[in-house]
Length: 106
Image (cartoon, rainbow, N blue to C red; front, side):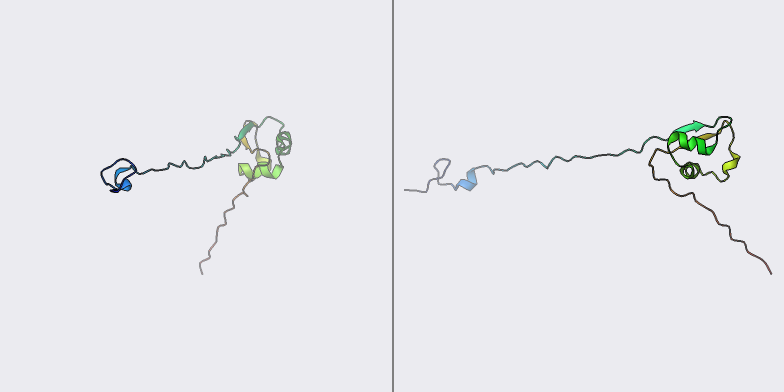
């Protein structure tokens, strides 16, 4: 008997006549989660407001309100001034300070 192939006669080898079988695998489904920072609120200072009172009304600390707005003199706020109010529990970076070196000339 002459060699038979799986796909018919003719003496060819099966691997020469059959198409390659490929298995398409799909990558695992990825789930991404994006956490967006909460929107910053703004508050316009009214006559008679204090920074402490404003901070309390938004449920934040006085120090966070001052740091978030870069206020250097808490006593110098004015009615009509607009403050940024950080979201409750937000991580407030410490206020940056600038140091000026003074040099003396002999």
